[in-house]
Image: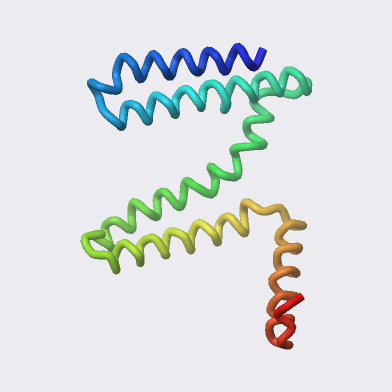
Length: 140
């Protein structure tokens, strides 16, 4: 079943590229490939997996994509707001904007995206590494 879906994806992407890439350019080609991959692998494969596992499609999609969307939406809004502050016409502005967006993203990803037990494991690993570096036990 999945091989048929992959073949349909290949046919869709190839026909979209053959008919529109030379006329509409690289953005069209990228959008066509992305649409084929999202439809074939992002939606249809998950639909097959939910049928096989006997779980609801909406529940399964929400369990996969809810946290990343909750993290990405405020970061996206922050990036748009940041465009009013940092124009982005010099390298220092671009670098400062990227660092600020990364700081917001990683803060939200750590607090919202990671389950509590994974946060605890990461904190313990970072703390143990700091203690090793402070003691001079770099090679292990």
